[in-house]
Length: 451
Image (cartoon, rainbow, N blue to C red; front, side, top):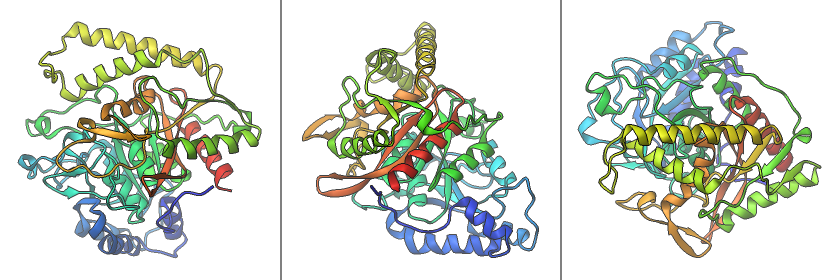
């Protein structure tokens, strides 16, 4: 089994090692990344806001210095999602009226990355309000999937996944509330991690309506920040850098783990282009002697979970404004949802007393064709020769989002959708705070399936 790869460029830790060993200077690393962007981004359009001059200045200040031990990304060029504040750069979330909304300070995560030695060379594209599985907006245009320019790279961290997949930079950080890290990773054939809710700060990740009014937002319900990379080691390093709390890693071998594979979700069928590579992956794992159950009475009521997740998601995204039906949630509605979420978290916690990880598709389809002037969630998606409502696909995001669980997307193969060969990922979901365990299990799966 193999998955399509577009680059053999080194990852973040490999680049940092070359700098540490004196084989590469920070200026050379930054220059090489900017040259790659110049050569590759014309047709992908992943980079929304370049910051090349300041990146060169920062790199030159690092040249000739001995990398400090507490800076694992010393001299490594990377980008970050446009919605994070970087002092001196715009954060408009795809809205023309906020195109001149210049951040006065770095988001906390940006500060953490810089403290780890990373050099931010720009910000990547998003859909308006971060609310689509595409990344197109009237300010920065449309980002194309680097594997197939007629397809979406996903969203809302689509620019993030595209720029990493194409090899322009080794790593990124995005955000995820409806699969916005996991779906782009799946669509673009890279690694992505949805962190446990609250583990990575989103201070300085504020909608421009709020930030332009001088208000700081707290970490909203369900939404997380998570990294994208081309290997597990970089993903784990980024999580350690971005984490607000110490992370525990059990180091349990995959062949000692008990897994539950969930490939059926009420009302959310998956296309054969996704099912076939995932089933092939499960077969390889089973042939290696790894125990995988296909059903379990311990699973929460997934149909009810999806209903509660969609209610909470819509309220959180609208910040309590009236929904499409004209109704506005009240405090009782919100507290009822918090109670439902707490019960759901307890059900998943009980499941993880029996199972180490749950495996699931990140989305029901591979990279979707571009939709002009509309969102995936406002249209239909093509599943096994049928058109189903776009929002049903969110079930595979909500399976980990509603209970606030960590989940790693690992590339596992290639599927065929209407004649197009496209990457396919697998979602490895674990207990709360087991972020490094999820990444480690995903790495073991990758090593087994990729030979």
